[in-house]
Image 1 (cartoon, rainbow, N blue to C red):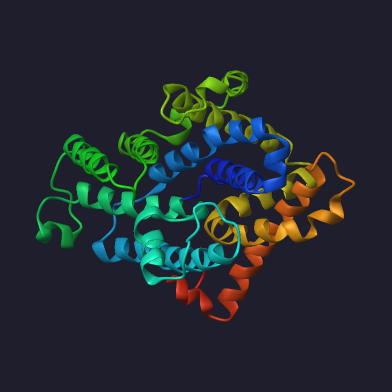
Image 2 (image 1 turned 30 degrees about the vertical axis):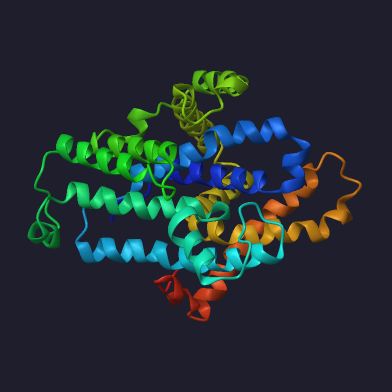
Length: 326
């Protein structure tokens, strides 16, 4: 079995923690510039890594199972979040409890953080079809019938066309496409992104330029490269300290989080929204930092707890698979 890339798990863990952080409303209100800086690179980096990790060397049945395991939780969570948005103040929520509005959220505009899953599904379908040939017969056999360059051109064209609709963001599609290109170049991940303290310095410099926070700027592409390279460098430093038990345990915990970002992504909004109910107990924490750390811990532990409960009760099959955790 192919060994997992622990650098990627490490990066995904840091990104999912940052995602929970910016979804804590009071923290974002206290540090709007920090929130904007995190938003500038976080999801583009996630999209690049996602595009890089998707494996299209699968049969149509296997690819269909992968997409179903995204589509089922997506439909369930978007439906639930949409209904909740009718009763609670949620940005871009529905204004009436109707099938039409819920379907619009599921199939077109999405809601909350779940647009990312929608992007994964759309791009995953287009990616697979673009690389698996022009005829249904070849597609059924899972064979590639065109060159990589031609397939990338078809994929880019399909992304461009679909990004003209509300269902797919042009910038999100672009970063997913970058990840696919890196994958199709067949160059090792650690050769594309080089662990370096220089990358960290450049990254901090880029984050200091608010005018470059737009996803449509080339600076964000470079910021994503610096983010990945910087986190890989930090991870390399931690690996050198693995003889210390506390460091090794911390790394193991983060790698576990990185392997299980999907259930955390799906369920963390439950806990970030619930956080407002215990926020008054942290009135003494004017910095909002302690409150944010507690909420992050609760969101991660709670999300993994839900996933474990669903596995034990076999409710995980509602999401298309028996196991949700790796």
